[in-house]
Length: 142
Image (cartoon, rainbow, N blue to C red; front, side, top):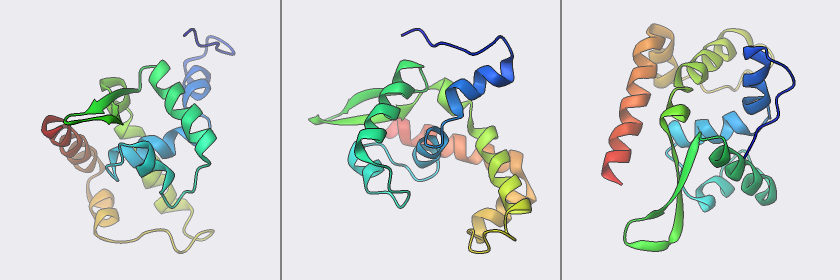
């Protein structure tokens, strides 16, 4: 698949891939919540419509952010897993969460505020590394 980009700007090019309102949500669900099947995503609290979910997963696969594979021992169930390109987005997700924590609480006071957010506030680099490590360990177990 050839992706069309609006211009040669690296920022705009990244937004051409990641700027859709569902793309980073799906990646967050994979990385942080451990979602990996269509059913996992479809049952999430974000309530993404199944036709949109299907299109976004296919797009993420086409641009190399996720791979689709089969669950070992169950060839009927598709698994969606982050690639190295997808895992490289971990620091971006951490920065977005940090920004949201610092700047959106007045607009959305029920944003999660627990142990994970405290860990993020204390050392976002360590938090990002821990997310990456946890995901890689999960992959090794698949």
